[in-house]
Image (cartoon, rainbow over all chains, first blue to last red; front, top):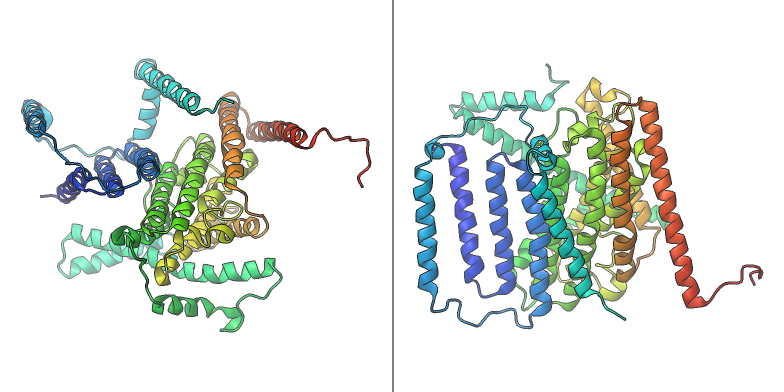
Length: 169
Length: 398
C-alpha cells in the first residue's frame, strides 16, 4: 500500500464517519459541525487528486458560507436544539435498498471501465490546472454557456431573496 | 547551490541523509523532515507571537501617552513571559452547561486558522511551505476556519453575551470576506497568477500599491474587519458585551484567542506586504541571500501590523448597522467596480509600456475612488438634511 492510499483510506473513513454522525446525532448544532468535518474530508479528497482549486473552493464555499449559514439558521430558528422525533420512519428499508442498489450499480458500471484498476500517471510539473479550468469556463468551445446560465440563475436567486426579504414601507 | 542561497533545502537534505544513514526508509525520512519543518515554523511563529504581545502593549502605550510594560527586564521585554506563566497556572474554568468538546476545540481552531496561513506565505524566495497555485484563495479558506472557531466559541460557552458577540463577529467576517476576496483578485490580475510567489515576482518593476492604491486600501479595511479589531471590534465590545465571544474562556484558552489575534494581525500585515508592497523584494537585496530576504519581509509585515495598530488605537468602535451598511452599500460595490475597471484597463493597456500601464492604472484608481467618495458624500448629505433639515450655508457658525 502506498502512502497516498493510506491517506485516502483515513480520509474516506473520516468523511464517512462524520457523515454518519451528521444524520445520527441528536443535537442540531453538533450535526452542523459534523457536516463541516464531512465537507472538510471531501476537500482533502480533492486535494489528494491534485485538484487544488476545487479543494480550496470547497472549503471557502461549503465551510465558509454554507455551513455557517446552516449553523446560523439552526441557532436563530430553533428554540430547542435537541431533536426528539424518531430519526427513521417506516420507509427506511426502501431508502437502504435504493442506496445499496445505486452503490452496486456504480461498482458494476465502473468495473467495466478500463481506467478502474489503473493508477493515475503523475502530472507534468508545469501542469496549470487553474489556468485550464479558467479558460474552459470562458471558452465558447467548452463551458461558457452552462457557466453563464448558472450565473444568471444565481443572480435571479439573489434578486429573489432580496425581494422576499425586502421590507416594503 | 550552497547554504547561503538555499539554507532550508540544504538543512533538509542533511537531515534526510542522517535519517537514511540510521537505516530509515527514504520516503519516511522525507515525511519526517517535512513534519520537522512544519514544527520548526510553528515554533518560530509562536516565539514571534510572544514578542508581539510586548510590541502590541508597548505601541498602544505610546499611542496613549503611557510607558507600557517597563519593570521586567530591559524595556519590559520579559513581561510577556511572566504573562504566559500567569496564563498557564490560572484556573482553567468551564462554564456550567457548556458544550465541552466544542468549547475546547474553538481556541485550537482559532489558532490553527492563523498558523495555517503561513503554509502559503513566502518568507524568502526559496522559503515557503507550499507553492500553491491558488495561494490567494487559500487565505479566504483559512479565514473560513477562523469564522467557524468564533461561532463555536460563542455558541458552546452557554452565555448570551458570548453568543451575541459570536453572531456579530461572524456577521462582520462573512460580510467583509466579499470585498477582501474581490481585492485579492486585483494582484491576481496584475500577476496573472494566484500563486503568492508569482505575485511577488511580478512586482519586480513596480509595487502593486502604485498600480492600485485603492485596492490596497480596501484590502486593509477588509483585513482589519476580518481581524475583528477596532473600529470593527464590536464582537468584543467591552462596554456592551463584556468581552464578546471569548468571555467564558480563562487561562491559556483565552491566551490562544489573544495570541491568535495578534499573530493574525501580523500575518495580515505580511500578506498585505506580499500582495501590494513586493513581499521580500527590496531593490534586489533578496537575491543576495534568503537571510536578507527574511528581515525585509518581517520589516514590511511589522509595518503593516503597525498600521493596523495605528488604526485600532485611533478609531472609535462603530455600530453593527453602520458596519453592515458600510460594507454592503459602500465597500462591496466599490470593490466590484474597481475590479471591473482594473480588468478592463489591464486588457486595454496590456501591451503598453510600463509607464503608461502604471499611470493608467493609478489614474483609474484615483478616478474610481474620487467618484465613490463624491457619491457617498452626496448621499450622506441628503440623509443629514432629511434628519436635520436643510442647512443654511450662508449663516455663520455660532
